[in-house]
Structures are given as structure tokens and as C-alpha cells.
Length: 85
Image (cartoon, rainbow, N blue to C red; front, side):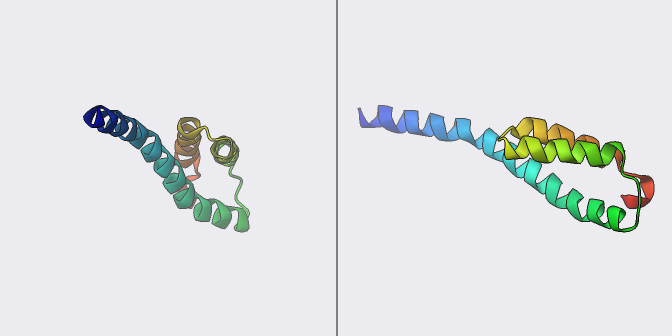
């Protein structure tokens, strides 16, 4: 019986790891982008699509939609003006 409980607990822990990894990835991308976006804004650059994708990613992250946040942050990173990367 104890081994069954441990097996179930291990299975749950393993299943939770990918969700946590996505969370870290979204947060890491956000942390990487935020200073670049703030600097570009301070320099008066138009971020256009990059700024909009960043906002959508931030909102998705606030709502707990980790995978969606990652996608938006990746799109924002790709859409950054060349001189702001």
C-alpha cells in the first residue's frame, strides 16, 4: 500500500515538472525582454507589434496561461526593432 502511495506521489510530481518549466521559461523571457522594451520606449522607438505581443504575454501570464504567455513573449522578442535587440 505504501509503495502505491509513493508511486502515485512520484507520478504527480513528474507530471507537475513540465508545467513549472513552462512557467520559468515565460518568466525568463519576460525578464529578458522588459529592460529592452523599457530602453526602447525611453529612446522613443515605436515597438509596434513587439509592444503589443509583450502586453498580451504579460496579461496571459497574469491569468496563469503559461504556454500562451511564452508564445506571446517569443513573438515580441522576434518583432523587436533590430536596433533594440
